[in-house]
Amino acid sequence: MRQILSSRLGLVAVLMGGVPLGLMAQTTTGNNTPYGTTSAEFLLLGAGARGTALGGAYAAIANDVSALYYNPAGTALMTRPGVLIGTYDYVASTRYAWGGIAFPFGGGARTVGVQIGTFGFKDQPVYTADQPQGTGSVYSVSETFVGATFAQNFSDRFSAGITAKVISDQLGDASGSALAVDFGTNFHAMLSGHPVKFSFVLANLGTNLSYGGDALVGNIQRDSIPGVDPVPNLPQPAQLRTKDYPLPTLFRVGLAYDVLGSPSNHLTVLADFNQPNNNSAGFVGGVEWASQRLGGSPFGVAVRGSYSYTGANNIKVSNPSFTALTDEEHLQGLAAGGGLNYNVGNFTLGVDYAYKYMGVLGATHFISFGIGW
Image (cartoon, rainbow, N blue to C red; front, side, top):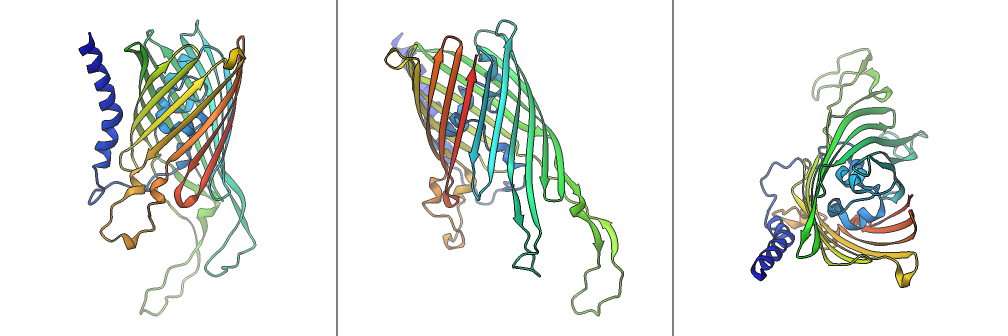
């Protein structure tokens, strides 16, 4: 029996520690990774401060309303209806907001929910090469997605869920739209008397974004050819055609294990491997400690932290002087946070905060509020 338990614990250690080591051994030299070739990147900004503090590894343990975003299968593990709203003070004076609501039914075997996420900024001055001090005009950006989720428990250990999403991208006077789906699974069991969870998630699989609108309609003049006398021509009304861009599709595998666990306290170690379509493979490692009913009171507290490795932040170049990356930028991906909740009967009220470091872009802050009944 001891040999069996040792083998299982060894397997977990390999899964938790081996993925990062394998990924760090990779290099990007000479590959064809399509860095920065996708649109609607706001789809990757998360939902709720708890998930932000834990990075993408949160998908393995997501069992509240934010599971609508991180892993639709996790909503099937909800025991009561809930609402969650959050706001993300992002870089360069931009803001992201997310909200969701979910309802278990069928005796808790199934859950339905809806979510909405928005990102953007307003009234930014327009600058051109001819008018570097500003044209006097302003523009705004508003990006939105709306999703509907259905999830089901297929057994006492396995659940799956699917989300259908509509994406709208308003960039000044140009706009685009797309459709996408998320699919997730969650397997939960016991290992050496402690809960262990696996998750598989495929997010933002959908159509490409193509743009149109007034910004792409106007009078077009023929460009002159260097060394050739200009040919007289009249401006011609035309509509410019733009390239369509894929969505930031992401596949991730997550693992979570309760190193310490009891009805009122747990210490969970999390790991996540992810492969996006616009970056090289990455990983996330995180930890969460939570305690319920502090001193017999209805209050609970949680502390969280994580580190996310992203390939684009660690590109190896032959001459480092050609890049702005420094050791400081390698710290990008550090996140931490905590939460406080209040539980009385079936009523739950919670607030969570997350800090995430974005390298040269500085620190960002996410705060969210949740209610369950």
